[in-house]
Image (cartoon, rainbow, N blue to C red; front, side, top):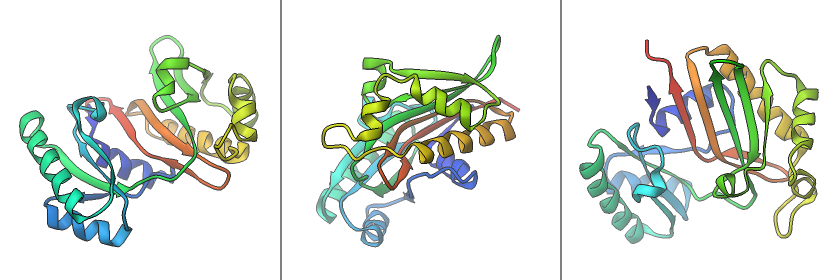
Length: 215
């Protein structure tokens, strides 16, 4: 069973994983009120258990700058929802700041058991496939070694081009939090956090997919 994004966000926030703050909105007026409390620019997304790759179906509108653009974006997603998944929810969140994008994944492998994955995220994940794996349970020393296996890690840690440097201790803390979550919840079969935005002073998970074992 796949959790829609807004439910995955709530689940992981309760597990103290640093998720982006989001609001569910049922109308353009509700979206405007939420945007006023967050301040522009904002993002609208379609949260659906049937379509986890939202960008591919047009279910994400970025850099919404004002009420007029927000109303137009909400109308677009409402029409998309009626066509693709009437049970989908429209969610609003702040536009994320700058940072390097990473990926954290988890799978209960039939042969190897629980496996954690970490690497470059966003659109670069499938392009470069710069990832490292660890069997769980694992400790901070394991995660530090895991980071060292990434080809891009030295540059990301020092700040690549115009990106802020990525804090290694904060990254290890995130991997520890994800590990604790998945080991505490054996019903989680798979977990994808992508992208995870990392800077010198912040770590924020922008999108999450959780697959649960059917009860």
